[in-house]
Length: 66
Length: 271
Image 1 (spheres, rainbow over the protein chains, first blue to last red):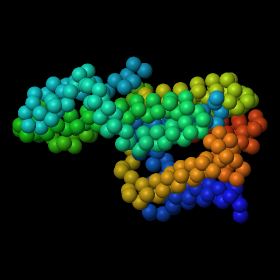
Image 2: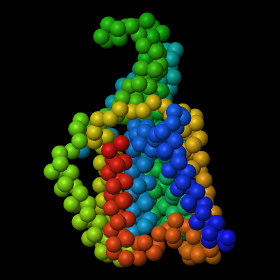
Image 3: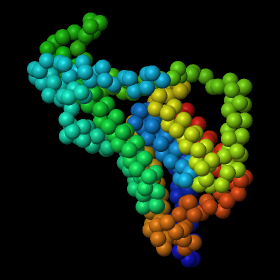
Image 4: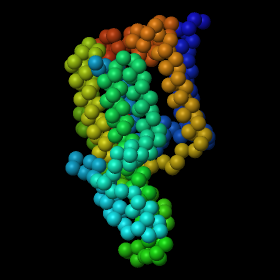
């Protein structure tokens, strides 16, 4: 396993962690919020709402804009 | 649009005019917005900078700068600072309102509507409620099918038109900047639909999602620092950007990616 594989595996582990946490939140009684509830909570204030949307806009800029 | 950000200063000004006595002295000791000195402004901004989303934006700005996009980093830093200022002012307004209510309670004054004096929580509740005020008329139902269909057609058209341009070209930049700015502007105005706000996130939830966020950030940073230099991608240490390059090399891939980006933006605006 070379460093490329290790790096990619890390990102796959991250993806699996996100999916696993979301499934746990939906299917069990663990005190873990779903992504939807998490973002609704974060975006209840203007700071949170604008901050999250700026991060979203940045993703678009990062991948497509000069 | 005229109501954007209009729910802040009147509360501050009235609070600052409260006569100094006991808890009121605390309220009066904090200068009104107009008379704030430079140090006060810096302190207010630092107070707001403790917000998690501000810290995340500053981390993004840092990553952007070391990735060779200093102007983008500067832009995000300016926005993060503005948000920190806004959050700091709101926290200050909540503290002033709480002090005012506490002063009224200490003096045994009844509320204007005849109800008994309230505790500190009322000031904070008022500030939170003010945060929920929207410049838009929040809808209560799902959008009509015709509106929804128009939105989908518009999104697909946008994705394929913008995706047909080369990455990092001026047309692609204009398209993404335009839609991104519109999304942020809508978000700044407030929620566009009525929704119930979940209660405070339990510690287990914070640890679970926070761990993933920290792990993802550090892993990406490690890959970035593993490159030959900060602007040259590496096969041995690929970042997320490097891994998605093949997908974004052709128009269909770019269009799909843009559609996902638009869907994510719409989903966020609906929160």
